[in-house]
Amino acid sequence: MFEIIPERNQSVIAKLTSSFSNSIEHHELMNDMLCITVKKESIAEILLFLRDDKELQYNFLTTLCGMHYPEKDQLGVVYHLHSFVNNHRIRLKTATLISDPTIPSATSVWPTTNWMEREAYDFFGIQFVGHPNLTRILNVDDMVDFPLRKEFPLEDQTRDDKDDSQFGR
Amino acid sequence: MAKEVTSDYWDKDRVATEEPKEYNTLNVGPTHPATHGVFQNIMLMDGEYIVSTEQTIGYIHRAFEKIAERRPFYQVTPLTDRLNYCSAPLNNMGWHMTVEKLLGIETPKRVDYLRIVVMELARIADHIICNSVIGVDSGALTGFTYMFQDREFIYEIYEEICGSRLTTNMGRIGGFERNFSPKAWEKIKHFLDYYPAKLKEFETLLTRNRIFMDRTINVGAFPLDRALAYGFTGPNLRACGLDYDVRVMNPYCSYEEFEFTVPIGQNGDTYDRFMVRQAEMKQSLSIIQQALDKLDALEDKETYYARDPRFVLPPKEKVYNNMEALIWHFKIVMGETDIPAGEVYHCIEGANGELGFYLVSDGGRTASRLHFRRPGFIYYQAYPEMVQGTMLSDAILTMSSMNVIAGELDA
Image (spheres, rainbow over the protein chains, first blue to last red):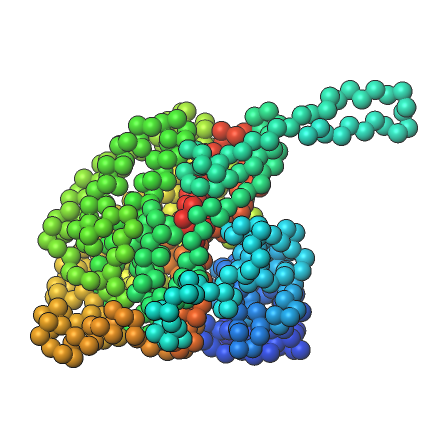
């Protein structure tokens, strides 16, 4: 279980709001992790700021993954950051409209996001602007769909014995 | 592909002395015995030396994240088996703990200790494979044949606990499906007795072996700052000299009660990665012994699951004789358990790095999104940088020392 240190969370929020007051949309504590929603335009700068700030030192990007919010017509990206120095984790979220699926790439800040962004592109069709090689990674190159979007069918849709209501959806 | 040789513009009479180099393209994989998995490296070679590498992955992609969106939680466990299939119980336990964290299920101490026994056995099994395969790739098959007996023995312990060997599907959300049998305890104790000597025998074959040292020291070295930038975790990061271990940094499953050291290396080369795994096996043995002592000290010898009616099946004799228990059983098996909305990230120290589960629930009966942080997928992208300029035979050794598992890579 992660340790919850409220002061640490407060200082992250305070630092971010003082530097990026227009970009922070929302923040909340989810289960045990501080979760900050930011505007997509400044995500790369915020990641750089969190990495290089002398006090916060989020020196490790744990993971990055794509999201699909069909009810809002949005695609999102979730970043998990970890400060080894303070042993503190936060979650950053950003979203974009499906009609304009562009999000600045974080590869200049974190080389490790290279494949993770390719994966998010592969499965959700998120265009990472500034990515050196944004091609499909796990699926075949000539695939046209983005399979982790909610509208993409998982199983044979001609079967009627497996309708969504049986699965709570 | 010919390298361009431009003559000096100002000295028109000068003759270009350098012969244009000819590079060869070499396909290593998709199915190559030395890659130990299905992935391809297209290498541009200058003789024996690697100029650049292009990786292709995804040959065994099975869409686990998509499948998990339609499965009840307990049916996700077999999917996690197939991520890092060399240490499936670790993945199983990590997934169970993620769900327990989302639902707020408190597991009894005995369950935690039982899980630790299994998880550390799985870590040893994984390290056995990785380290003995490093030996094979450097030309020493003997250690491999010795150590696979012990891995087999660990698989027999799995068999006693859950009935299966490789893809274990072990445990349930909230604990285990049954108590450990006396035979299982006997085997675990026997393993603890004989294995240290066996490990020592394996070490005498390799650690101070001149050929092995020449093949591995300073091969595939990676500096710490690059390793952090590339998201290395587990033995690969610790070999670079940073003592990051999830078991210590964010203890789960009562790891905070255990005494163990986190071995680290210095140069981040193949030899260090090998030595870190060797040392970790010894630590794992000590952890298992401590867990056995703690289990002995517990008065309770029967509890093996948390009493949470949402996921733990009722006892069979009640199911056969009692209508309510039958309905309850049916609802669990059909996945008719409503999950509270929320999102959670839980990570465990997998055998090859931080194995994370990012679980988002919107209140249905299945996850609305499940993302696996697969350590192998993340650190394997540093491979071209690690092997650039080295010889092909060293690159093979570097790959096997990174412990890249195709199942985990491709999800």
